[in-house]
Amino acid sequence: MTGGSNVSEAASLSCVKCGKPANLQCPKCMELKLPREDAAFCTQDCFKASWSSHKSVHLKAKLASLGAANPGEQNSDAVNEGWLYCLRKGQARTPKIPHFDWTGTLRPFPISSKRIIPAHVDQPDWAIDGIPKVEPNSDLQHVVEIKTPDQIERMRETSRIAREVLDAAARIIRPGITTDEIDRVVHEATIAAGGYPSPLNYHFFPKSCCTSVNEVICHGIPDARKLEDGDIVNVDVTVYYKGVHGDLNETFFVGNVDEESKRLVQCTYECLEKAISIVKPGMRFREVGEVINRHATMSGFSVVKSYCGHGIGELFHCAPNIPHYGRNKAVGVMKAGQTFTIEPMINAGVWRDRMWPDGWTAVTADGKRSAQFEHTLLVTETGVEVLTARLPTSPDVFPWLNAA
Image (tube, rainbow, N blue to C red; front, side, top):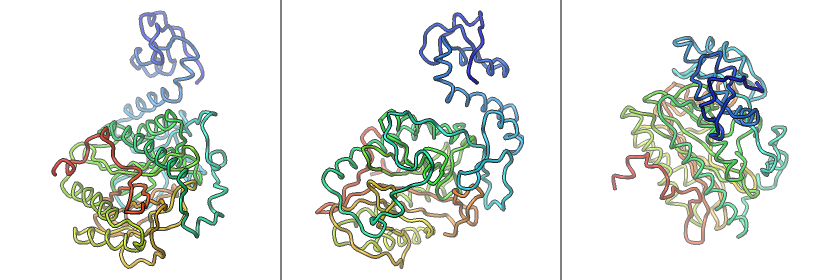
């Protein structure tokens, strides 16, 4: 929609966009009988500038009106707003929920259209057509780069932005929030900092972050599903800024979570902390998996084997690959100046995974829950620097950090 309707009664209302007196009304909101104060605009320009975020109000109203309808029925009414199910790794859409032997209770919901990147933002080479050009054929897929002081300083700056973006997302997580709304916050916070959300259109990934709920191991696509009390949700953020990437993720509690899920999430956090504690020059990359595997199995959990940590810098993903499971075959030793992620995925049940029809969402094979934490790390002469470390301003969301 590109315009609003004159509504004389709205003269006393304030513009949703700028706060000035408003005398225009969103016609779709009028049709849906939504509150006028949330649909008032002073000019067509304010209406157009707000459209990408304002239109989500219409979808939420429609989904709410459908009540207990199944996802397929929900989507049939949302199609008119461009909300569709994702297929083929982001390269296709469908108006109906795909057929699949779902492993747990979670189902995909429709996703919104691609978010806009302002022209002034520096973009990676996949931003337009979804295809990375430099990364796949780079020598850095086989050789672990030693970063220059300039690269390291840029990575510090970018990683701090990524941390602040994830913290912004964490602050809005609660029952009733959709993962699409989390994606919007991530997208807007990244753009506001002058960065590009690295996942957006990377190999056609359709969103600006990954949101992995309950049995989703990783690469969950933000959609119209509302988070429910008792869920756990991982938010994975990567920012591209000044030519380098910073990558991190955390798993959050939604409302009141059962004790087993609390134990899983805390164990996963501890797995990452224990792995980071051994990072230093001369340490073999394979030892990371041994440390993680030992702590997870002693707690009664399993370690995902299909996805691993990775080198990062001017490339989103490069050498080294860092498996998180024991008895792995990772080669090489750590050296000062290397940057990479460690990001263990720990499952409450079996370690094996399945792929949803969207081609991205990896879920546990038995439908039990999975948790993950990730940091971008720099090997220093004496040990390690956590480039994406929590800040004094980071939200207080992990109870065990207050127990000490």
